[in-house]
Length: 445
Image 1 (tube, rainbow, N blue to C red):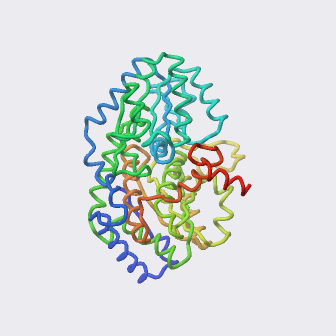
Image 2 (image 1 turned 120 degrees about the vertical axis):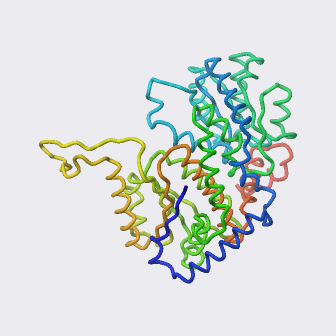
Image 3 (image 1 turned 90 degrees about the vertical axis):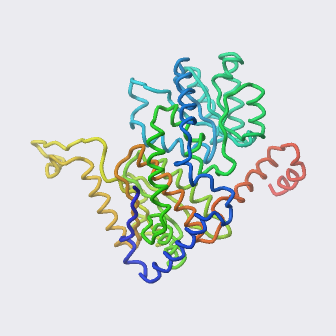
């Protein structure tokens, strides 16, 4: 189970104030559990670990096996925001770091599209498709979100041109609305296999729905273990207690923000497999809390690499941040540092020690240095990087996000500001229906 340690904040905060914020977080916990707060029609994620049917996983495995029988070795997963970040995080975390370079392939490679409007990216994606045996997962509630819709139009045309319309339909799976929307209509017309995006689960909370489950299964990973880890977290975090890790995390981050002016939270990891955990986390907390003129800005670093780039600012720059370190207790592989007779690199004092020991000492040394430099330190701890612990992290951060946002006083489940850029983009692209907006925005240029 995920553990939270706030000892690295004790020298920065008043203990009585922390206790008061624990009380505020417990009140927010009650709101989240009771389901009577703002955005309470988007709480379907809370019981996904305990309520996900085995039949859903079996259906995903059937698609994986069918595509494998067709020789599919490349699956293009199309989606943006929460429609891809959770799956991308899981696949990156659970993959061999050099899977692309290794000759042995046990499952299809999953690549992502529809998360940008780069023409070069799409052109190079199609270069890859031309060399491979391709299928597609398209994820969109409406089917009209610009970035994924553009990518899907291009990929769909390629599949139909390459394999024929009938075969292409067997190589496309849509994850979309149950009853309405352009993608649902197209899926019905073309006979695509479909999965439902639940109405009561927002995109950034959707990793444990088909949105995340299907790409993870197709990529060859154990989604049952992910769900098992999430289920353990669901049970543990449902217990109302001042020691509840989600309550402790929410209380401390809100205290640091509101009482001590810490407006930036940096998620720190010491394992490159967690790079996309940070990207997923940034969307989760940024969209959930950044509204109504308030919110902690979510940022991230990958150490030890970023100690040689961002380390100087964190150590001695403006004291606006605190750090949340994702601590992994042990490695799943072992590499021991050998002895060298010449010792020109002066590393013989480390001979016989595993590399992860050095990594842990670098982490501990950095934590102490940053505390000395005026940066409070929280720690989120898991045993190791595997499917079970990743599932626990997913659920922990989701549940803690709900508690934290309610503590902050905002609706965790809406994102009204996301529409602003879209309206301007549609006006600049001269989308039908935006004629007046087009005139107005062009007058500003």
